[in-house]
Image (cartoon, one colour):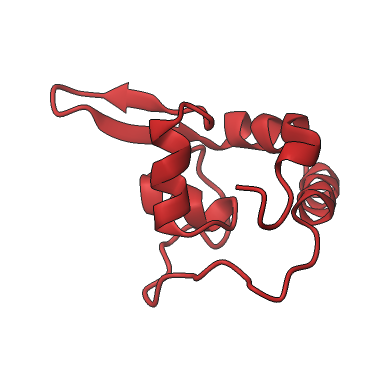
Length: 99
């Protein structure tokens, strides 16, 4: 499991490329550092895919990123496995500065 995660992380780093302008990470980082749970909130998902909260909002409104609405309030949750698949399948569309 850890080998697969590290391989996926390497792929994500390759897809994101190197950029001098890294995404801003919130001051109070969400408790997703270990990524040991499957469902992520909006801020956790943004941190997980290394984009700003504003970019995450844009991705959601454009229907680019996979998410699920839960409950009567329509809370957004993100499946970590779907995000991994989305990142790997985004290919050249997910370069630094391309979003």
